[in-house]
View 1 (cartoon, rainbow, N blue to C red):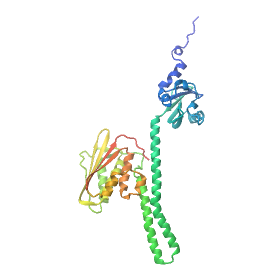
View 2 (view 1 turned 180 degrees about the horizontal axis):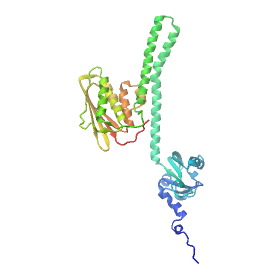
View 3 (view 1 turned 30 degrees about the vertical axis):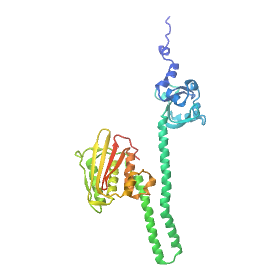
View 4 (view 1 turned 135 degrees about the vertical axis):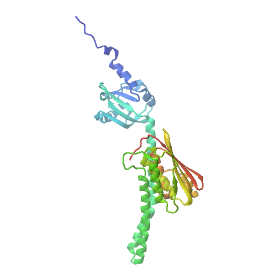
Length: 364
């Protein structure tokens, strides 16, 4: 009689072995069973939250968050079989909380293993940085609302006063005078709103594709723009780059940034012997662009503002003469680069812009 042989794999790899070791396979993860009890968890997650394996082994996942029904919330998120990068506050053993970005999925989606759920923990430090950025943007928005309300309320209050005066006067000459004054303050309001809209739209790309532009095409576009904006003395514009067929990534945004920067110079008082030089140098990691301007006269007040400028919407209404410079800086932020504005002498300025290559941008 032939004795029935047992499945050899069961003697080598058991379900218990898998459950004990699967946490080391999936780093930064917690492994749950279908009852949402903790089977295994990565050592770094335990250390960060202050737990030992004995504290959480086979315990309900709700141990990590007692303020809400954590199990029910995870069940809801997993109705599709998975969820991605949802922020959760996790309770540490000492009672403090850490915000993690958690993704979850049923193991059966990626392997022939059923009955397990994987929770993938994002780095707590990254979430903290994101929260800090959001708080900074919120503060900037609060500052903008406060500054814009004061900047716009002045002309608006004057307009309302003029309207009230017009409603009680019968003299045609007074009505004509009041109408002219109303038009003046309406123009001021329109100008301030235009400044806000201009800077808000400066780094928006109308199409979702960012093309590469050659240095030659950028130079030609800037030449036309500079020529149209030079109403007093013509501006001599040159480009010493030998290979002008080199392509610069994110061409639309780079051209818009350079256009705003050169327009900023053209709006300043200038001598007849002025010039702007556009130069570019690329390597595998970055693109360096230099604008050298001579014969443009910057007063001390403007120079001081440029040195201490911190881009923010609240500053746009306070310093309208810097609107093109603000727009250029806003685009640079989107390109994840940096700009250095160096005053060489009273009539010579060098702007050095460094753009990292192959960066993913938010297109909208």
